[in-house]
Amino acid sequence: MRVVGLTGGIASGKSSVGRILTKCLGVPVIDADQASRTVMMPGECAYEDVVTRFGPRVCMDNGQINRAYLRDLITRDNQAKRALESITHPAIRLNISRQLTALAEAGHQIAVVEAALLVETGSWRQYQGLVVVSCERETQIVRVMARDSQTRKQAERILDSQFPLEKKEEVASVVIHNNGSLSDLQKATLVGWKNLLNTE
Image 1: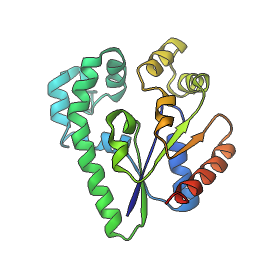
Image 2: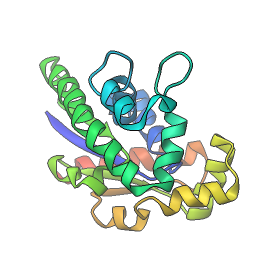
Image 3: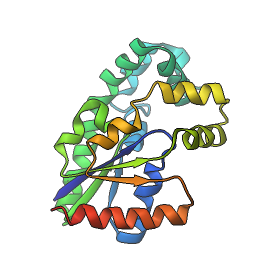
Image 4: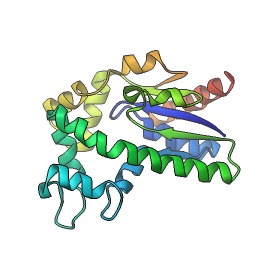
């Protein structure tokens, strides 16, 4: 089974591209963010280590990890970011590996792994192709402000803490630009996917 990576920056539209691939082409997409949620659920493999490292303040009243708190923390503190990644990344990789095995056993010929940090971690190299969803910085800022109820300063800080989209584009097999409407994105996604398959 061929496995393709799908990445981008915050609010670039990578999840939207993943949904288009599944809805329009039937391509299974494994979401690393969902895998992250799974491994940090109470009783799952990364939960206790996260709570031990960051303390009870990281938990909400229902006992679940406060992901918004963690996200804000790691944009301010690189040491905390590295600590969180050292706990969650191995668990997420194992979760994704198990999902890919299940898809292969079910007879799928191609699958996509959607993850924000494929380029940063170097894990993009293990896939047979990389799709990067990109957009203009100002578009990202506006989307983050609207989606996450962030101030402009908060949105800019988040973007500044991330790997530049331009650097991700440099290692992409295909770049999908997402500065317009959802209809525009769908068209660009279908063209980009066709181009990717034609590079086999």
